[in-house]
Length: 240
Image (cartoon, rainbow, N blue to C red):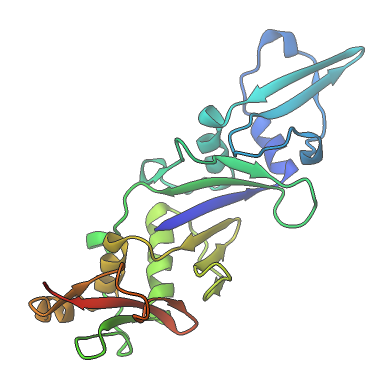
């Protein structure tokens, strides 16, 4: 699956706050500097972000629930994103902030609205990717994986190309960074793995050997499977 997040600073939140229609009791008050170390601990990613407004002898707080503000805040820092092509989590973490000073001050999570790039993909066959009955796996070379993720960024409207790829991270994923958007690709869904294989130009090869083997991310331990420095491997198990 592909997961993404927008990185925001206090200045980004301040700029977003300037676009809000505030209640009348906040009129003539000024927004205090946004400090994430003064926010409530965000243990589950669904805690409201609280803005503080001050004036002479006045202090008011205004909460921003993630359900209402996560998507607009993403679009405020990534205006090119096509809103209909992304979704924000409903039951999982929406956003987190970092009060420790290491890493991005705030992250807002989102994902593609659909799991497959589909017909938007142009096969990126590079001569290195292959599917093999005898080896019992398919291999998608690193260059094809990077091209696949770049194609996803373009589809979602993220104009800046990814400038960094990590293969694999300590938790076994591909991580990438494109401007103020970061993301991860995990190998935990057959539909996404097949979409990636088609993008890499392996559609005809997989169709040719379909009568003998099929993609199987749940293959027995020891099968060549996962994300490695040179690319992604996933097992092809004999058809039963």
